[in-house]
Image (cartoon, rainbow, N blue to C red):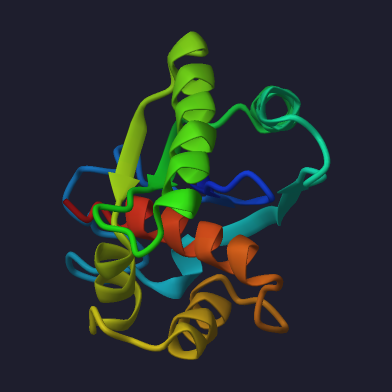
Length: 175
């Protein structure tokens, strides 16, 4: 199963593509490699991660179009079985919350057009799933993502690392 994790934003949208043998991101863990009802780090692989960047001088409509176009390319290339997106329930600044919501809308629309199921996770859920502690520091989360995906270094930039965490959270079947 391939999952694209997405951390939406209009300046930068982080993405991470992972693969896992699990058939359903909402299913309970299955027996693999002799482990009873546990998922081991051998069960995840990182395919690609990065950013979709847009120029701040562009009108919002053009920025959203670029996010759409780049996401469409990712979906066509990797053919994911699911898309996992960060869901922010509260915000500190309305000026940033609205553009993030617009970018998320573009992502949800593209997933619906391609008939790909979407799973949404709050930052708290992602941190809890990856580190076991919902208030974990970003550095802790990034280190665990590095370990789970057997990467040589912490994924960078932060938005891409967050996207990988969202994808792993989905693969773990967190509700």
